[in-house]
Length: 329
Image (cartoon, rainbow, N blue to C red):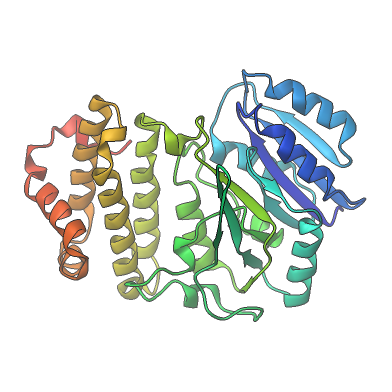
C-alpha cells in the first residue's frame, strides 16, 4: 500500500499543467502515487499527461471518455487511490517541494482523521496567505465543534479540499467522495459532511499549496449556467444540517452561509449571461422559499445592511418567479 495518494484532476489546463507536474516530481517518493485524471481535455493537456505517466515516478493516468466535472473527476481518483492517506491538487495549481512528505508527517504525528492546512493564493504575480479560520492548531479536535459560531467564518467556510490530507478510513466510511456531477461549490457539502461525521481533525500551519486564481478556463471566471450548481450544493448542506441531531444549532449557520453566497452571486450578476442572470434570480428566490422561514428572518435581521436589503428585495419578488426557472438545477 502506498503511503499517500495525490489526486489531481486536469481539464484543458495545458498552459498550467507543466508547473503542476513539475511540482509533483519535486514531491515524488517511492511510497507516493499521483492519480492524474484527464477529464476529457481537448487542448493538448492529454499529451502532457501521457508523457507524465511515463516520466513521473508513481504516476497513474486515468482518462475520462466524457467530461464529468471536478467532483466526478475527484471521485474517480478516490476510487483508484491505494494510499493510506489521500490529498488533492487541482490541475492548474502547484505544490512546494517536499509538501507531500510534510502532510504525511503532520497527520501521523497528530493521529487524526484529517488535517487542514493554510495556502497561498496566487493572482498574477501577487501572493496572499490564507489561513484556516480556526485558532487552535496542532491539537486533535472534534470536527463538529469547529462548525460554529454561526455569525463567524469557521472551518466549514474554508472549503478547499486540496488544503489538507485525509485518512483513507474516511473513504471507507463514505465521507471522502463528492456529490457526483456538481460543477461548482462541490467542496461545500463535502466539508460540512466531514465536519459533521468525522471523529477527529487538526489544523496545522503547513504552507505548501499554491492556488492559482484568475484562470480563464475556471468556472469561477465563466458566467454560464454551471455556476448555478452552488444552489444544489447548498441545498445539500442545508439538508444535512437539518437532519443532524444538533440541527437547532447547525441550521442557522447553514442558512447564513447560503444567504451570503446567494447575495454574493446576485451582487455580481453582471458577469453572467443575461438569460443565466434571470435564472439565478429565480432559483435564488426559490431557495429562500425552501429555507426555514423563522431562521431566515433571524439571519436577515443580523446580516449587514447591503446583503440583507438585497435578499429581502429578492424575497419580496419571489412570488413572480416562473416555476420552471425556480426549480433547482
